[in-house]
Image (cartoon, rainbow, N blue to C red):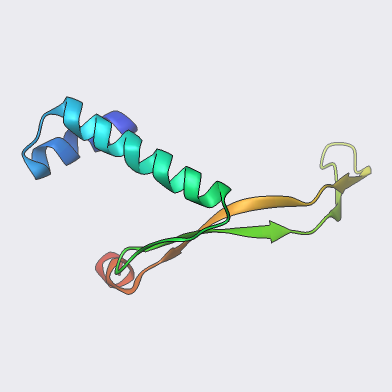
Length: 90
């Protein structure tokens, strides 16, 4: 599903205009991004939790040359599925 298809589905499901659905989706992604940048979690009970995790620096290999490379430490976004979503998908 693309962003456009998601906006269409939200608008139809909620009975709102596509413009309002787009605004809501953009606001949601901006708030989640802002909170993750601050190191906070965003929990939606039953749906899941957005959080961040620190990855330590490590060694890796360039697959095309086989040469060893250093991969720097980084902070990555994570999503843990909630119970209701997990059971709905199974």
